[in-house]
Image (tube, rainbow, N blue to C red; front, side):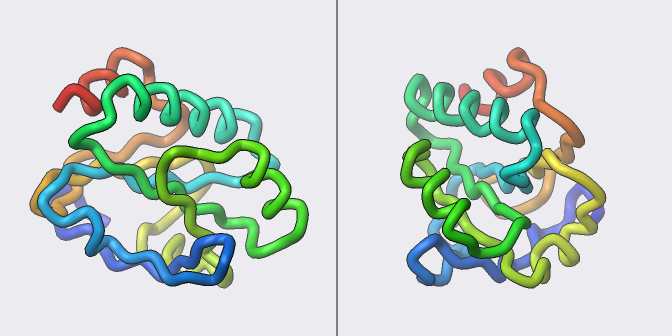
Length: 135
């Protein structure tokens, strides 16, 4: 994954088994965040995303990609958290492979043309996150 390249397609499904794609993000800048339920920093960051999403609802879109695989534990967690953005499950880590994922949390920022502009390993600092949400 090289900065300036097109964001690779995702192979993820929501908790109900519906396929999610990047088509919904066309024309909008977006974040693709890789996270694990067992990663405390990931949960903190997802909650930050939710707070910023509520504060700046447009135009930044978010796809949070869980790499743990489908489980009842994950379903209960997602039902409790009720994130205001798309959450997908990378069942067999195809998407993680396409994005050369090493660890979580890792987030990619793509512009409205779908070109990767930045990669963040670990939690995105608040001031940087605010810049992304403000556009």
